[in-house]
Amino acid sequence: MGILRKTKYQSFRLNVPGANAKVSTQSDAATVSNYEKVTGVQVSVSNAIAADTGTFDKFEIDSQEIYPPGFGVNILSCGRDVPPNDRFDKDVEVRAANSPVNITYADPNTPGIVYPYIVVITLKLSNPTEFK
Amino acid sequence: MATSVKTKYIVIDISAPANGGTRKFSRKLPDNLALIEGYLVTTQNEGAIANNQHLGFISVNINNRMSHPVMEPVLSHKRAFSKRKFSFAQLAEPVQGGTYVEGYYKNDLNNAYTVKLYLKGKQISYHEAK
Image (cartoon, rainbow over all chains, first blue to last red; front, top):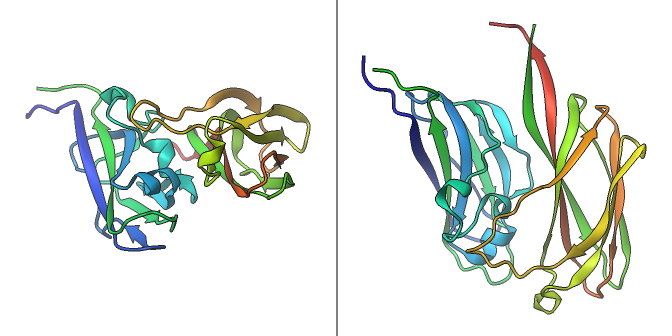
């Protein structure tokens, strides 16, 4: 039997082309198969104004709502001075193991945003124990 | 029958009216919401002049006005993006599912902007045990 590793970080990248755009993960987006749970969520946005005003229209993993429509990306994002393990919303626990990831980001069309920009959603995947 | 408890967020958008006006809000909570354990108020587009200043005042009632846990000023912060992460202020409010969260936001500035009230709760669901 192979080793089950404890932690993996998996990212989903969304390219936002213009004002008012709604950008979604691909229809077949899913967590990797050999990790049991999603235990953290972090978001980073390449445009500072969009990072403060952008929202999610949908954020579902394993067909379960994690964040409701209108949830601000600023709640899930921070800068590099925050310690790495503190950057994640840890109050998330949903089945991973090839679960569908269905996320839609809505551009806020705030004055000053320069297009295109990028939104990256990073999931922390965990296994509870290690086996050999 | 198995029970699962999950985190559930409620987001309420409030348009702060111009010229010191007051905006009421009301939202029906999900039927299976059992507890509100935190809240967070953020603002957007209040303008650079509002940096680090008092913006307004928010009041929040829960359980069809049986409980009044939040009544406080709202401040603007120029967010030092690299140093801060938003976190929820603690509450421990048992909720009767299907009741309303209501309240108002009083704008103490002359310009309009957006306020977001986040409630973090726990919802209970029942399902067949596997």
